[in-house]
Image (cartoon, rainbow, N blue to C red; front, top):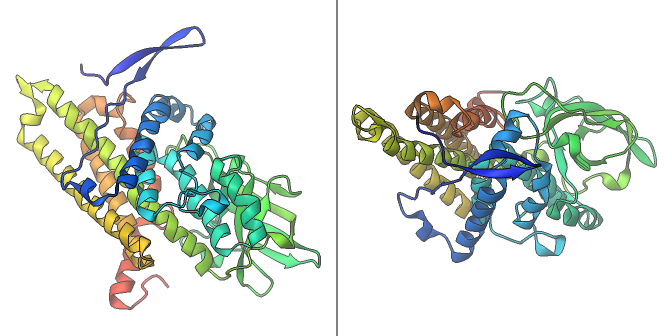
Length: 409
């Protein structure tokens, strides 16, 4: 029976086996030629960090459904938190392709790790940077960039997912503060976040963003359990029971549903790169296994049906890479549309999920064990294909864009 390479490690006077990360990234169309030296250096640094800090522990933490909080400092050090945020606010001032490449490498390690960084970057730091006051930027962004503080994003509610505009969370002007009530659900990072970017309606029904800080009376964030997906990511609720929010914690730069949706555009862009990382990991494992697994006196990679699977995988990965790179170029030029981002998110998550399933088949029975990453990626991607816009909603966004007719309103 073929097993993933392992090495013997010692921990608390006990020996245990840790997998050796042999990942080699596929680049069938020589896309590295399209990247700058800086972009490749940033990607390679993130890849090395994932191999050292994530790969050896991820199966253990996934199995016990726990986020490995010890990696937060490292995520900050490799620039995974707000990489495109200007240096004056603690970010690295990188371009959008660099951001995408970091997300690709993190999700190659695990979707939950990428989710933690993606939420911090695009759903917490982005709105503070774009719509916050100067005082808010200087107070929150530097601490978020290093990981000293972790943030979360409160939009989805128990009864309002694909229709966030129907939210019930609301706040009232009480003179010297706002009084916030309501709840949010399926919130990544919520249980250990120091600040939540919460979207709620004012008394006129207009949506605004509020910065709700940990410790405010009436604010709680219980952790959600029982997940079969994103098990190495911490997910919770946000509950607001007459929470007094200082008026200086209102994001002043933009209101209306377009404000949180613009944050989701940034996060969905990151997902379009991240999902490729999961797909690449599954393909790499399947290709290596197909060369090592012998049946009927030859490697299974010599059989036509195995080659068909592998050929289709690398084709779809290559198409997804080109889609993400072009989208990143448009983002750098501030020309990427929401509909273009929806297409890339939908396509790349879809192909990643299909590749995970095909890779599992190539591994046979071994594919269901945590000796290999496919089942973990597959379960994670079942969440990624739903969150930040479901597979079907993104399809209808493209449909509306090309026809001019809205099918889901």
